[in-house]
Amino acid sequence: MTVLRNALFIMVDQLRWDHVGAYGVSSVPTPHMDALARRGALMRHAFVQGPVCGPSRMSYYTGRYVLSHGARWNRVPLSSAEKTLGDYLRPLGVRATLAGKSHVLPDTDALDRAGIEIESERGALLREGGFTPIERFDGHSRPDGRSGYADFLRAAGYAGEDPWSAHAISVQAPDGSVHSGWSMRHAHLPARVRAEHSETAYLSDRAIDFIQAQDEKRWCLHLSYVKPHWPYVAPAPYHAMFRGAPQSPVVKAPHERTEAHPVVRAFQQHEESLNFGQDAIAAHVKPTYMGLVAQLDEEIGRVMAALEASGQAPHTLVVLCADHGDMLGDHWLGEKELFYEAAVRVPLIVVDPRPEADATRGQVLDPLVEAIDVLPTLLEALGADPDGWQHCVEGRSLLPLLHGRTAPWRDAVFSEADYAYRAARWTLGRAPGECRGTMVRTGRWKYVDWEGFRPQLFDLHNDPDELHDLGADPPAAVEREMRERLLQWSLRRKNRTTVPDSDVAQRTEAVKRHGIHIGVW
Image 1 (spheres, rainbow, N blue to C red):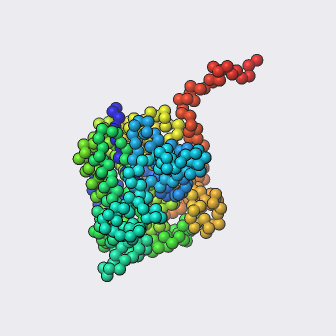
Image 2: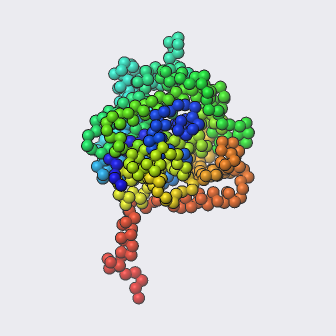
Image 3: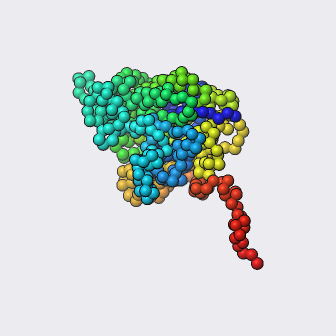
């Protein structure tokens, strides 16, 4: 099997799986993402390792569970000891390039202890999680207002110290008045930038520039869009494209408030949940979210057209995924953070242009897939030696599935949450170290262990909308099985990350070869 030259790794922030047309339930047309699914394979059941930006992304970039890499919430630095996509690709002569959001923060304590200057070449790699940014844009400017996107907006005529806040996420009413996009009441109004100057178009432009500039060198581009993540602000015409159009119904029931799990009830009291819990507000915001998805789809189409025109598509693996979903009022909740399907299940499409993948081309694949599977898929496709990563990476390459090969596969997926940084911790009276939740999901059951509280349990066969939590009185056999799964999973994390398996095999009983004879009579 030939090794692919390049990889285009597209991640979308806060994109619900059910807002991609290829999944068959979307109320938003997404012809370009659907075309990707026809060119590759769509994973029907893909799940992230944490339903929050930072932890999820660190799992994508390391191929490891949150329990292993330790970056449990946003703005928690990833340990400099953790190897990432860029570290694994560098020996191949492939540079992992970033256009967009990564959420990586530098492990400054480790850099200081090692005497590494953060602005040095080595420090820059560690600071950026192994990526070489052509444009790092996490959806906001630095406090001084400087960023590549801010400079771009100023050059396009959008004035101000922070043009992102003043224009890209601000809106303008018909009377000319300007309002902040942070307030969801303004979601129906257009952004104060033209569509071609929006964040989504800007990042597409950077990706296209990169693709067109490549010659014979191999490359891996991580194109990481910041939308449709809030603020829910869309440029014209996308802000009004779906206003008045049919929306997917909000999934909730009255008893989910009166009988809510304590952790869920605490999240339902957050401001975003109190607002999204009102049908009128959810109905007001969702058309804008839908418009952002429609714009995203068009921009992905533009990037893919550039890849085709460059002649590099036959040699490029393409991955399209999301870091998590968006509750949008489901279960009386806003944001993400909990383990409902709307938050933890994500779209995942993989396009392998090689003939071996013809076995599943255009198909929907049913196995349970995790976000940590993306990294080993990229590594195997690009020819990285498994001996250099299998002792660290906890995900599994998807290539056997894509190539139609019969191989043992997992029957459960896992995800983790930590609400120590959220107001729910105060509501529940928990210490920062007492706020962990862990999900195990099989084909039928979803079980969530919440530290200090009863579990959640959903029968996904009989209750696919997760409206009836059985955790207050779970079937004993099911609870035993799910808790045993959690135990075995936690015991099998890969912690010996400094020595590959091949070294261990060579050094088994090697002490005798070095003249060390223990216990000899």
